[in-house]
Length: 445
Image 1 (cartoon, helix red, strand yellow):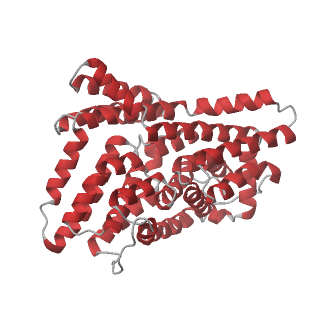
Image 2 (cartoon, helix red, strand yellow; image 1 turned 30 degrees about the horizontal axis):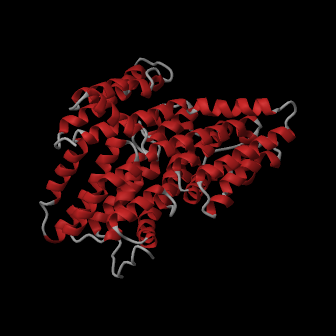
Image 3 (tube, helix red, strand yellow; image 1 turned 135 degrees about the vertical axis):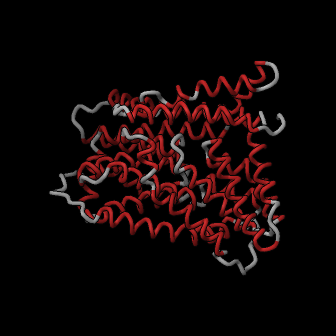
């Protein structure tokens, strides 16, 4: 790895300039689907070229570094989830599952509680399944249908699902972020969960109140008819009996594909194995943009890391954290821990990778500033999820935006849970909440 250098971060700035800048420009010109005129996987190519140019060593070595980032285990796992989630959403929609689920939901949930209901459902699913991506892929199409049926704001309705998904991703005991946070900080899962929940709950309650106020005027003339059997694939995935038992998310989504296909073959005239195959493949192709971008961002992140960009970020934050003394220093330590994972997440666009990269620095800061390991684990998980849910090139926002054909920036302003979670977490640092009196359990507990 090269010496720490801020120059290594310039490829990320170039990518944002092309992606966000072009989207804003086309939006100012009144072009429809402004952020899709120059797609993110294309906008990132100049950044990759710049990263390769800035790197040192033989060209083949630089390219190998990029390829190793593309093939990172976390990135490949995300790609497989994208494919299965896209296939499930495509097949379920083709056999009438989305329309049936929307009509079923509107028949049992009062229109005034539609948005809070979507948030709670997404939060439950993500907590059970341990992934925000699978949750968004499964529920975002339903949110689009709900927005059309109730005339609620489409960006708000879809963003509500993203917020609920990030709530569950942050708290789930089988989430990669939770596991990474507890392992890097050396604390027990249950201790981190208890502390995390006491910060996330106020943010979630405030979000529910706000969503209730926003949907209080929603009306539904008459929910359409539905066959409950067509809702079955979503019920299995949403209730997640399998996931609650700890089954891998990819297996849950695969079961959902089988159930949706079975419903189509048994209930829909002229629905054949060939059509089922086409619908699965259509789901794959629907994930093409986010899949390619995730691979390329993984490679770009590896390039920036190898060139010392992330080390420079860590060093800068570490120097700031050493300025505090005494009790104020403890607060500055917590702020430094939060900033370390937040900035790393901005650079990598992956909350799990950000926690793994910033984990050792966070642990070192925690030890020097007498920050409880439970507290540091909670903070790095919270702020990684906050940033991940709000960056316009993050997988969660891009997936939701592509599902609803919306600008990523239109979604970001409506993901109220992530904004409120960040504010509540900062307030908790300022006032020293919650107080920690009991001794932490061992990591093996």
